[in-house]
Image (cartoon, rainbow, N blue to C red; front, side):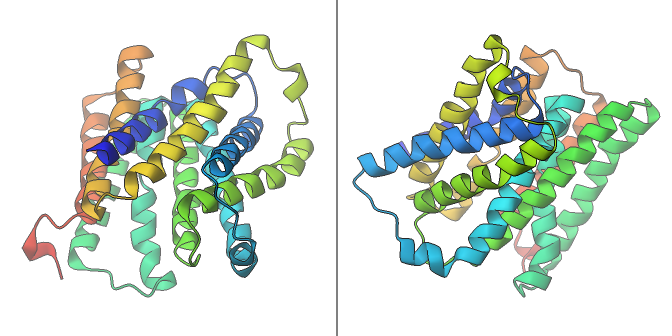
Length: 290
């Protein structure tokens, strides 16, 4: 029961990221840099308080994969935060939750996994859902919404890349892996921020500072800690089902707190998209399983 509570709490924390990001008056790359740096610092302190040690021989053995996965994590955050700036949190979240579809499409090529009939059906349904969301944006000529959804899809592609790359990382503990990836992501983002938006971190509005700390400590550090602590004793199907607390909370935040509107077709598209990715991860229908 404790594990479920920890995992659900982590999903609730992740579901509020869009709300917090909106309150920070910085470029998406700067927000990504701060969240990865502060999150890494928090988790490192926690890691050593738990009297654990970094397995540097495993870090070196997985160095190349860690390098590319950290770049994927940085790209994921930059485009997700950018998505929040251009469209509703609900639309950004739905675009981001296309990541499992990218994983299903790439798994036969990268992981040599067979694409089952169930997964093919789920991919088709997810694309139908996405088209309903996009089509509604086109019919209403909401260019900014479409741009935000596009950024959400790019973030999803980066996240799918991160998930696939992590499959090749051997023997590293999840919390240790997250600390290394967050730290490496922060290192990579420093020159990127300098070359693009420049360092405005020291001239940020004072009203943004509490939200920067919340994003780094609460949404990244505590969120990841609860996520890994909870999933350690949960079965795969439980993790798959409880993961949908995240988009549910994000959509509630969008509708109830920010008063952002969704049309009936967008809600239908979102339902199809989330339902298809949900079904793809659990064994609900025997006749769809190969």
